[in-house]
Image 1: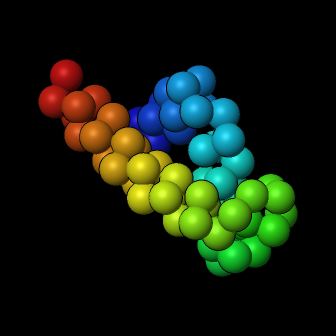
Image 2: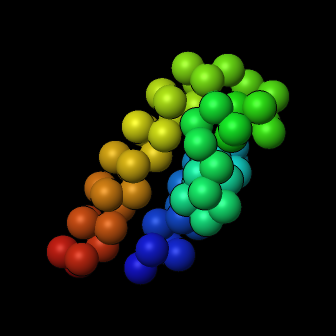
Image 3: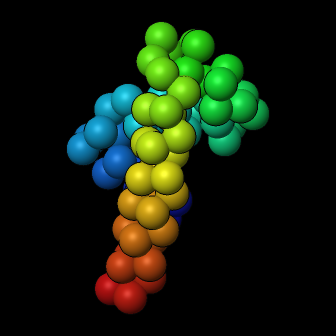
Length: 65
């Protein structure tokens, strides 16, 4: 279920999957993720909020189907 949600996220928002990999799987901070991707800290923070909401929604809808 989680892998399916990540695949949907990546298809719709490719950079978001990179952020998930760096933040969640690698354990980097928002600042470290921003530096690794060459984007602003504000962008990472905004996208991380979006990612968490997106994945939660996809997983919850998948559980109901």
